[in-house]
Length: 489
Image (cartoon, rainbow, N blue to C red; front, side, top):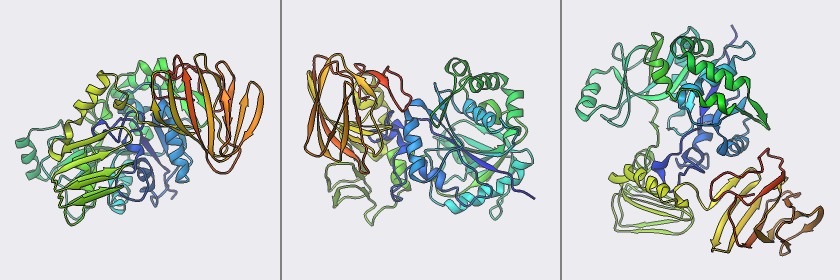
């Protein structure tokens, strides 16, 4: 008997603000290597831990437009060609995302199994995770909507809970019908839950036949289905992306799949998962799941710790030294440093909200910004000038563009660049430079096999990134720049 195809549906939304200053809206936690497991990011690990599952097909990834090139590049780095990368024009929670994935998967008459996963979860025991997924295959093929409940390690009040109809067997991986979903309980209620053997944490991971979920969505949340179907029918292909139609998708209710379907259906089953799971929801949670040294410290990057215990110390650039400190989180990035007691790490969202309210760029973006052609880093800036370091990938090219209010000097410090200025081209090598006057149509390309690095000096009365007019762009971007104050080229 042929194995039913299993399509991973990886939800890449979320900004992970509780891991600020590393995780920000422009580059959230799912795109960072956080576990110390080599250099694989959380998104890449989400895909890689599936290797070995029967019938595994190419993944469907769902993300917002700002992160589309990051998602595509991270999949390319691990040799995965997605089934599709679906772009949500606006966040509408998990029910619309799941609906779009199910409609896309059944568009040609197929009825695969869909394994819905979050891109920002950490699972330490990948083999046990795969075993649990395989245990859910048969009930899912028979029409059950299977969710994976995390076996509790403590009476946590920060998670929702799932109650099964009976206590789980300690020696068998069997799905059990769901009795109810429970919102985040108080401490006493959480402690009582753990005594019954019937409660697990709600992980937000699911396994089901696409047709079974669509049938329940049609019955229980028909408006979600109609809006998503309209958004897909009017989608537009953009390179390797499928862009959902904005107006239709914006009409979709903002609702979680748990609320829309799982809390109401009679088809729900839960499988217990005990595989070292974490949603990496805070720096303290990351410390708890990471490998610690004899002093209880987690040290990443250029870090020295002396007479220090139970700390999470992370450096992205500069040297961080901890002397005689305990229970601290210290995270250094290119433009901010967090110092917090581990017990207070959950409160970082308040700080981020304040930064955003103040219009501080550190609230949303790093100095290093990733683009489809490479990345750039803001080095220093003033009212009428700023300096950036730009790195362009082999074979990549910036858009053909012009500026009304600023001029630019480019100095190549590595590689070979082709510079186009008002229709004329010149080849620049290391230590060579060029000048881009105000109003000049220009473009930079990398024809070589190594990255091109250059220093860009901008000068003018206005340096905002909305002063860009695009004439051509191989990445399908419009001539109107995004509102992010650190966007470019």
